[in-house]
Image 1 (cartoon, rainbow, N blue to C red):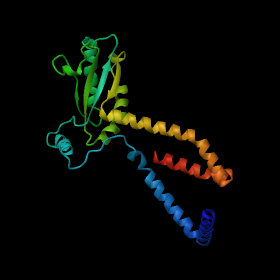
Image 2 (cartoon, rainbow, N blue to C red):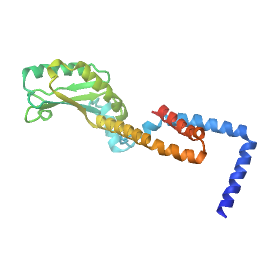
Image 3 (cartoon, rainbow, N blue to C red):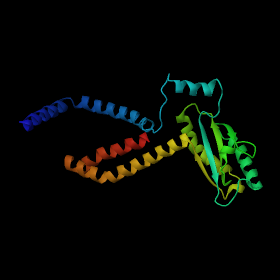
Image 4 (cartoon, rainbow, N blue to C red):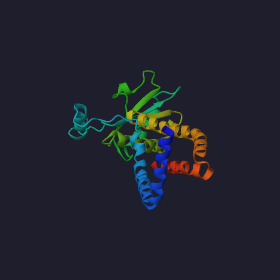
Length: 230
């Protein structure tokens, strides 16, 4: 009974499509254009960042800190330098980290730099004197803007890092950096999973459509749309 109903419905649908082929082509072309436009927004929607709710007390406080009080550390990052055998009290390190702070302040989008020294910022210095954190205030107005600055800052640090810090390990961290890395990892992991599923998807399409060309076409179109969205 159900098979007869479905068979009759498919037959009517096929007849309607054959009689209105031009309209069907136009509709599918419109759907394809809309899908291409919407797919470009997909990466931004698959974001790991939490979003502030407009009008809430926390949102108003964040806005006030950035506008009324001109706080340069509403969105900030921390550059952590560490070494297994050297001390931050060494004179060579002190000169190198001061030079690094000056260079970081010139990076586009950086609002202010705090480089701890012996008289200030003890909570940014490890008790064993083998690691230290430089606080980087950003001009970003949102977490999304701060995230976009993470790769730029990492490239900037590699380019301007003084030779006196060659034996020091460094890590750029903070909320925005963690969210950026998490999104990057999720994107790469999803892509690997999709590539592993491609053979099975192609096999199912071959069974459905009955030919290599017909089966590979929707798969190729899907891959192309995904690449454009990225």
